[in-house]
Length: 222
Image 1 (spheres, rainbow, N blue to C red):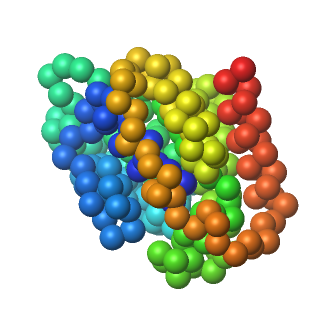
Image 2: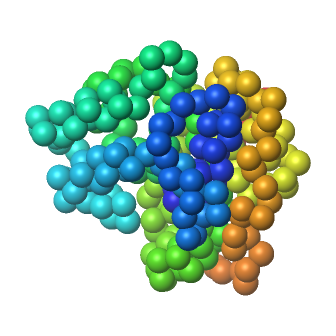
């Protein structure tokens, strides 16, 4: 989900040797950039739009045609290096993954999540969303993340845990992916915004999804 540490995780993977291509390294709402490849992000938007969706109202059933396949081929040709591990980051991919799997069936995954209240507060600041809308969007993305995590045994890392615990989990995640964690210092606690703001009420459905994410993460880490 957006505002859940995806940029921090992607930057850490990039620092450890994952090729991400020409990504954004600066952003008004993200001091170290969102680490997204603009063509990947635009293509994910195009796939959602072709099915009547957008990032804040994602389409659940996807169809795509020759034009989107051609753009995907061009993006992959630009992104994939001659050798070495590569990847991309975009929260929209929890919905568009079948589109990418058609071209590249085998992937390694990494996921991140954050308490729904912190995400809702961040969306209220950045996008002027109501807390209710932010929580509903958090729930939609994270339910999909949970489904994929269970299907593919995706390792998940919680962004808003104690800094020492986050760094330890990050090192373990990098090792799981076969990356070198020698300089795993991309994360800085000040990258996390809106964790200590005024509490907001979180609905029971969102808390059930959050508890399931926590349970999945602990089960894989045990």
